Length: 570
Image 1 (cartoon, rainbow, N blue to C red):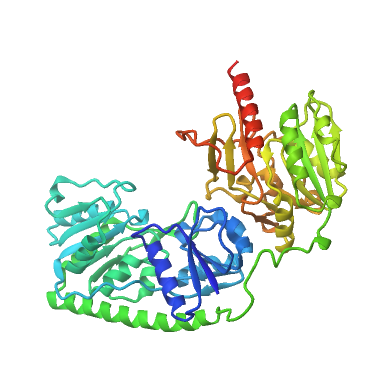
Image 2 (cartoon, rainbow, N blue to C red; image 1 turned 135 degrees about the horizontal axis):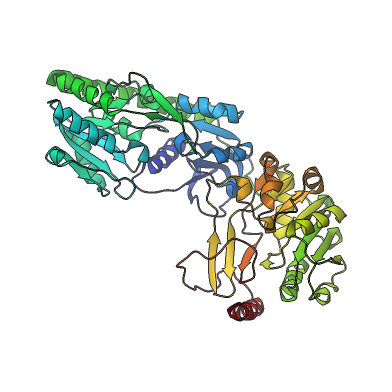
């Protein structure tokens, strides 16, 4: 059994710990399982029985596994990702709150609980020292506890020395002069040993968070035998630890503006009252609370290990045949006829290259039709007439790309339509991969969003990745589209839009679509006359072509790039 663990894999984060925990517990019940750690930004990955996406999603990787599983943290799950859920087989939730958040959006949501890697219980706890657990998490901004400390000291509350560990590149903290002897800010990432030493020594651990997917920092502090001062978000309450609670007289939460779930608002006054409660605790009581928290962590952890091992045993594939994209491909005799639609205007030199890409496709030629919709003055007929399945259609000047795409779809004789724009490079498997993946997934449309790109005028290779917070319809690349004619007949391209015509074409129909890896599909060409908004990132130096073009193709593209650059400079 092969499992792809897909995440950001940043060191010293709760997310990295999640991946370690999942791999460890799964390996304990299946010694033959092979685990691979896949960086979320990769456009493709090795085939597997399971893709497990930890906190993040990359829809272009869905096709590489028999099943796709998502383990979300609601506060980092963009609402725009809901459209991808139809392509996910299961959602595993670490908290009961997450179950309630995701149940309305997916039919197969499972509660799996979670745990943390324990810290050693310490007999050296100093209850006059406190640790504020912010780390890299912006939902735990330290300014709240700093302001609470200032007010508590004004009220003569005896507060412990406070160490605030946070990421100074993400969060700015204003420390009043009155607190400089009481509050120590650690704004740079501590080495693991330094952080562990603080956890070991500090008798009080404070965490005030707007939202959490679980709460490793709190769980680790409990395992070390610390007293906890927490606000009342649901994941913290689910732990069941004895804590000093920052209770709000009127709890207030607001919907997250971009992500799932809500954000709890905490006030300085509630924190001050909690600090006052802690100050009133006797040493013996503090020690008993710490021991109780450690014991509860051990009990909770052991129960989680037991239940999760039983849960994961049901996912063992045993001696079953391994998943393979090739084995699940559509047999050649069952492949449908495909109409290729290429809008163009005054780009004969690009059409010559496009014709070569079309001719090199490994799709059965008797099942292909190529429509070139041309409203330019410079004819490109000489470059396409040698292909018997090509139709060069001359149009009146002034058509939008959307109008030409619609006309191509309207007159297409085959039930499946693919786009091949005139100024991009399409590998030989481009049509076959798009069509077979769309049909295998029983979808009506398929496309890429991430594009490997090459600037032919500046000799620069790069990969364009639209922000994942954008809706899928705003990330789509029209040059990579594949869809059924029926899908187009339901709603065509908006003809009055000059660019990004795919957005409204897809919008509202995302559940019928799938996203593909671009590796077998396209290399997007960037040049001075391109209509695409995708450009070389600022500051990128020329780095040559990294996409394996033949010498003849590279030379041809370079000549075109130099000419277009010269024309643009005039």
